[in-house]
Image 1 (spheres, rainbow, N blue to C red):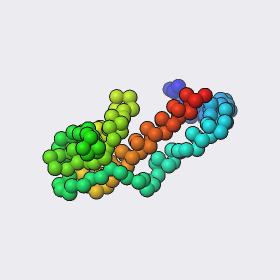
Image 2: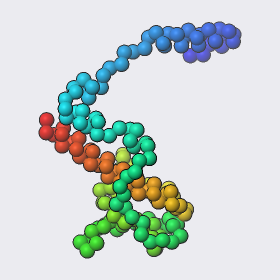
Image 3: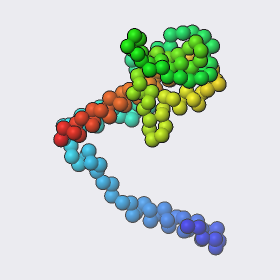
Image 4: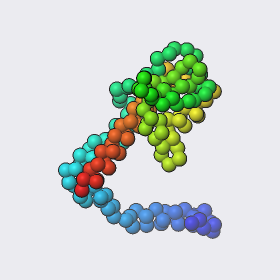
Length: 160
């Protein structure tokens, strides 16, 4: 709310609003996990933290980028794993691809946003440097971990 009387009146109203906001803060309520601290809930809550996802930690990568070349993202295609190879391939141009990308990770969507597909689509027409290739490998592994955690939470919730 802004009152246009004089500059001093506007400043006084702002000060009063800030003091009122500090006095009348709503009390924080404990989350459902904090209220019901059972061993199962603590196991889930201690499994992963936001800090772990944000900090660049060493992630064992199974996703490989085996063919050297120009690293230009021209066309993005996912080749499903078959019985012969058993490895999902994300092809970024005629010669180069990411290997061992599971289908559930490739199709993992948040809302209508398919993360792995969108990450590459944004970079279409550009050249991937070494850091970008490592970032994509990390992305695939983090999504795989996220899917595992979601399945773990679902199984524990269904067990109750």
